[in-house]
Length: 533
Ligand code: FAD
Ligand code: SIN
Image (cartoon, rainbow, N blue to C red; front, side):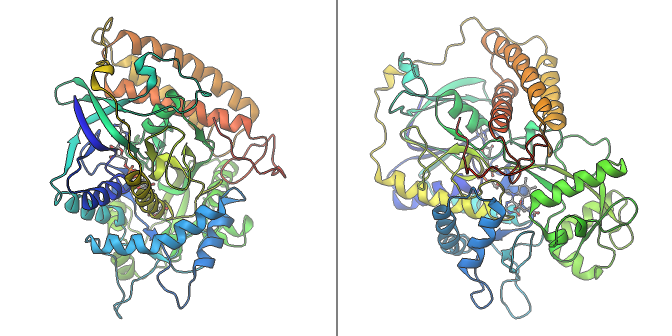
């Protein structure tokens, strides 16, 4: 058993921001960071385009950034939260720079600001096309300076510990559900440990792996959302899954798709269909730089009209040296598969990229469960509404990592007699005989979510998806109670829960808004509604 003051689940930008601040303010308190993979294996590490923030006050303003965020969010943003993130974000970016993150500068020594879809000004700070890698590097190096931060890598967190584990019946309407910590599987020795904590922060990231094609790495399985939902906490707006318009199309390659950052379109990249036609002007006057929901739907439509599995991103008109200077990683990747961007167009297709909904929090990152906070992509703070503005998520993760730190450092935290919390029981379970029972279910899940619950939805598709999910759930629960727990089984369970929440949210939403498009309800409802499950 481990006892700690502050438990952080996840080592991406949200979790590490929180951990660093706590360690700095309370040198005599213990901060425990748990992550299920290598320390830096996070969505954060793969961020390309950069972090949005108002730093050029001559041309840009808070009002413009707020307005762009609200337009992208299509009526469902919480305006107060948008203002908080945009205004406080500037200070958080400054801190990140002080912690050692480097952003590109121009010849005059000013930050070289990038442009992305939905932004009315150049405001994206970036480090080449590997911004996330640079941020994660700086954060991990900084964390190593604090002896009061204890890091557990390759520990898979399974469940939140609540009154349920003390033998009480907990339902969605139970008042004052409390979190006392978590059960976690240490995959280096296969033991399941109790970690008891005064305060727990979930910073478990996104859920792109629920879909067959995603820009997200394999860690993005929605574990935090799954755990909170099972613990009877509140989750909202899960139907708003953002598909990035331009993932590199590589036939026959499964798993994580390589991203071609939106900043390439910001610098002048043009989307073309298989006949060479620049089609975006037929869909939106902002053309290739319209918000992501519009561009992804336009590409989906062009692919269906022309019967192809991808469209093209044309960069042949770029100055080669400038392209290589800003996008060295993309240049190299394309070259490695025989695409010289000065001569060939890049085949691209939309891929699941970001979860706008998640664990419902207030404006301080507090969830519906006491002593449990959430920050980063796993949280639904109200910033993104029905569609996230490009490069706002790293900003949100830092602002809410900070806010959760401020709020939880003022709270007393839970105290529980450790002897009252039972050890994890493995009674009745045996080692799994066949991993195929897990891997095949995962494939089915990803396929049905991509085909039935993708960019365009219908009532019939959603009904079909739900029926198939019921079956997958039943079979997976049988496995869960009868076999020794593995991360793969735990993740499958969480992904089925997340898929269920996406479909349920989509079925409740009788309209098309932002990222949710249902051809049976093509219009927006006059009633603005967040769907909480
Ligand atoms: P993550 O960085 O994903 O970290 C999650 C952590 O939780 C990991 O350490 C993981 O191991 C851990 N974890 C999860 N489940 C468990 C468990 N059960 N037990 C233990 N540990 C667990 N956003 C922008 O603003 N700008 C961009 O340019 C940008 N580009 C992107 C490019 C790509 C390819 C991708 C995939 C995303 C991009 N995003 C971008 C989105 C952004 O990167 C993420 O939303 C953000 O990094 C999420 O940070 P996080 O701290 O919430 O989670
Ligand atoms: C990108 O670089 O296109 C991704 C930016 C984001 O997801 O915010």
